Image 1 (cartoon, rainbow, N blue to C red):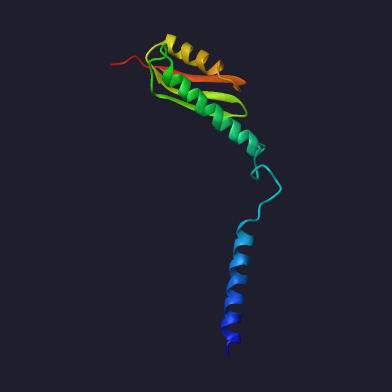
Image 2: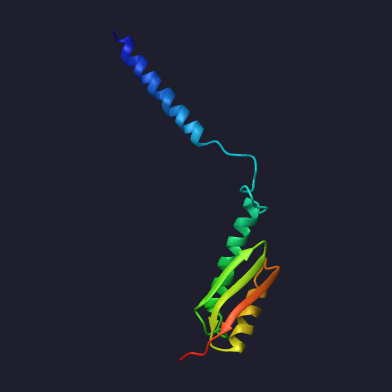
Length: 114
């Protein structure tokens, strides 16, 4: 009769082990299906985006906090609004000076403060 609790414990341990190993499986394909971006590129792009946002927030010559930044394969896209053409150009220059930026697509709109 002591054999049944031992079998139940062994079966439960086997189930847990199976569930954990099934959940831990990964694919060898580094890119999500339908995308040519690798995991490393995605991380690099996220890092570049963070650096550009930080530089824009700390830049004294850019007067807008309404700038959205996205990065894809090192190409930074700036969208949103700034109060002047000078701020638009300065934001472009700040983004270009960030390490890892291949190019900048500046889609910022000039919208003077009201």
